[in-house]
Length: 186
Image (cartoon, rainbow, N blue to C red):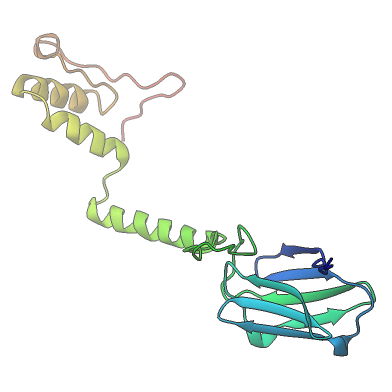
């Protein structure tokens, strides 16, 4: 009967910029432990025996590993090559995931939105959303409706918009400001 040594348990956690791997193995010293990382394969050996072997799902910065060995565990801190959250630590025979869930750079997004708004303002010749809507409405109407819109809008100083030419053509359109406001001649 052959007894095979059971691999030690491990756990891992992450921040946006680093992954920490903890292998639970008692009785080791710093000199007993060796870490190898090559082509996404991470191997931790202790006294010549492999205690952790895995193909990492994402790449890490090999030159900046930090190893700490305590009497109960081996802790390895590995900086990520790209900031973001990993979905898993190991590949398990799968292909490497394409991208990380990267944090959003809200400052950059805000600057882009402001630039887009400025560019739209220049392209619109200063038209506001209301002006755009009215222009689209006016252009899509027949000539009688266009006359009604123009007459009601001009005579009421922009406070009334009537699209019925039969109703507008024979009478003067009075100024009708919204409730709570009053019209003043300049």
